[in-house]
Every structure is written in structure tokens, then in C-alpha cells.
Amino acid sequence: MVVFVDSSKTPKNQFITILSHADEPIEEGITLAVLPSASFIYSSSPIRCVNYTGLFPLLARRINVGEAHWATSSRAPPLQYTGEFSYIPKYWEWLEDILSRNKKTLTDAKIYGAVRASLFTYDRNVHAMQAFFEYWCPATNTLHTSVGEISITLWDLCRIGGLPLFGSFYDEVVPSAKEMSSLPSSCEYLFAAFHHLSLKLGGPDSVTSTEWVGFWFRGSVRYPKPPNRRSLRRSVRGKLSHNPRGIITTHRNQCRTEDEEAPFRILKVSEKAKEETWLAALLSCWLGEFVFPGKEANLIRPGTFKVASSMARGKKYCLAVPVLATIYKGLNDIASSSVPSKCDTTFPAHYLNAWLAEYFATHFDLPEASSLDPCMVRFSGEGAAKYFEEAEARKLFCSITKFKFHRLALFKGHQEILEDNDQLSDSYVDYFISQRPSYLSFTSRRLERARAL
Image (cartoon, rainbow, N blue to C red; front, top):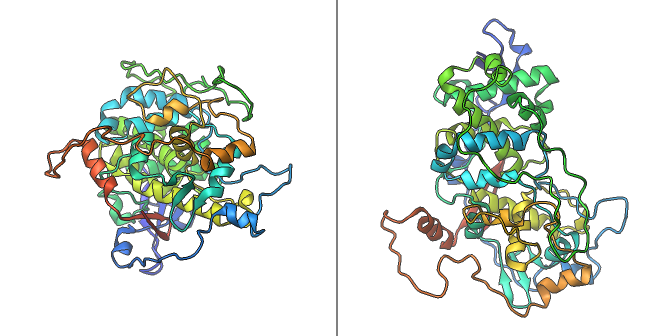
């Protein structure tokens, strides 16, 4: 087992160094900056409200007056933001195994559907996305349409992505050496795996999600890389898909082969900690690639290890709030840019793709999708996005004749009185939380953000 050493030089600049053994020189170990919890920062950081007056700063209006423009170069991609979930070798094979073995734990943590949603990719039409950005208002976090304003809400993310609204504060933390002993043992093993791969690959910045998945999952590849995305005009959903079918075998052989046992032997994982560590390892990848994609594409972030280890024990975390804050941040970056097609902001855009599909019919439905899955699964896979020319795409938002603002509402066509008395179901609690005007807090590394809701 590795050794964790406090290598801080000052109380304000704390570091933790991971050593292969107690006698190893500290300069030969892998050193990480300690990232403390941001919850203390928020308690002492007042949030200022700003009233906006004048014309709303829509991108469409700024384009009309020459203050912004879409890049016309055919060499560069029309949209350069990052964060859409993409293929990772062996991730789907590993995830299917995880879902078959850990349904109860994931259900206890209220993330089974949210994790299952990463079994698929989520397509989009470029012109539909550009039109959406043109009518998104960064001053109000709303989409301006011909029938009024609408926005992506916490309840939408709960229904569309299966993201829990109730739970502990999500925070990416690199614990100190002293704190490490009080965390689940699976957390120590994740840091040990990160240390092992860092030494093998040449440093922490070389530990990609691909390398991480390849280390933990030793099975064969069943799902090859999908072909490059193509936008075709079609009247029905494409029949070909390289995504998994989503069929999870409930009862699988729980015994692992000798090759599958390799990561546990390398890290000296105790027998009783194997399943929890196995699950935590995948959740750390899921958090960093699907839920909170980082600017450093495809890199494993040690800050996810603590939360992933707790989730692997069934602990609930509120994920919808920081995800929505991240989406707002990404949309506002693009809508405020003078050349939006070159804006390289990062946010989990697959949730936005599914939201547009739900409210504006930008995608073909998947008929065989289970009603137990998050709504976004219905719009997953290659060929799901409908084709729109630029003029057609703008009509989606500025020429609406009929629109259902309550598509995902909890109550449709009837009234019901709810009392917040600690006896409500999880869905009612989530609904209550989503109705309350508030601020969305989110921390990324050492950057604190607050978004008005």
C-alpha cells in the first residue's frame, strides 16, 4: 500500500505526496496540491445581485449590429466548446459490469439512472445549437422565444438526466495526509492507482480516462469507436448505432478472472474492499467525463475520488445544482463571445442536447427506451438529431405556434397540496427544492462561482 505524506511548505500552501513506501525520498513521489472544501468559502462570500436594464444582450442582436459573428472558415469546426460525452475505449463494457453488480448501491445513492445514461452518446445538429445560442440571454439565464422566456431548470435536469437534487454538497477535494485516514479505504486505493499510473505514464497530467479505464477493466472490447458524426437530412431516426443496447443482465458471475484481478493485486486491495473500490473507480471517471467534464479533456481528476468513494457506499450528493451552474456558465460564455464559434468553454452539453430534444423536438425518439430511464436516453445514439438548415433552426425559437411549458411538470391537469413534513417521497422533495428561487453554487478547482436561478 502507498504512503501519504504531508509535504506542505506553508500552512496556506498545502501539499500531499504519495510514496510507494515509507523509505522512498519525498522528491520521487507524486505530489498534489491539497484542495480544501469550498463550503467554508461560500459561507463568507456575499453574493451581489445585479439588476439589468436596457435591451437584453442577445447574441442574435449583437450579430445584427456587427458586434459578433459566427466564424466562416471551413477548416475549423463550427462549434468549439467541449464537454459533450464521447467514446472512451472499454468504458461501456466496464459500466455494464458495474451496473449488473451494483444496482442497489447506485439506487441508494439515487444515481443509478444518471450513471446508466452514460451508456450512450448524444448527438446534435449544429444549426439548431447556433440558433439556440443566438436567443440565449446571459443576463437572465433564459432562452427568449416568440412565446416568452424559458430556461433549463433543476427539475429538468432531475427528470432529463436523473441527477439528484437532494443530498450532500458536491465538492472536489484533495484531502490532506491527515484527513486521508478518516476516508473510506476505497479512496486511498484510488489515490494509489493514480500514483501507480502517474509513475508509469510520466506524471499526473498523463493519467487520462482511457488509461484509467484500461487499468481497472481488463475485459475485451465489445464496442468499437463510433464513426465521426455526420449531419444528414432524414425523416426518420437512423437505424445504425454503435452504442450499447442498454440491456443489463441482473445476475452475472461475480467471480473475476485472474486478469480481471490484476488491478487489485497491484494495489493490494483487501478482499472486502474490492467491490466498493471497483465501483468508486468507475464513478470517479463518470463524474469527470459525463457529469463535470473538465477543461483538461480526458484527464482523471483526483478531486473526484472522495465523492466517488462515498457514493460507492450509497451516500447521496446533490448533483443537479452544480451541473446547472456549469451549463449556465458555458452558455453565457458562448452567448457573450464576439466569435461564439471559437469559444472554447466547457460544460456537459449532452444534457442541453436532451433538453432541446424534449422541449423543441430537435431529435427523433427512441421507441424502445425504458420509462425507468432518465428522459435523455430516449434521444441517445447516432442519427437521433434531426437535420435543420439555418433558417429552419431559427424558426424553432422565433416562430413557435404551440408550446408546452409544463412538459416535465410533476402535476399535469390537476392541483395537489403538498406539505413539507419530512414524509414526502424523493420525487416530491426534489420538486420542492426545484421550485425555490435561489443561487446555484459551484466550485471548479479554486474558482468559486454563483449563478442566479
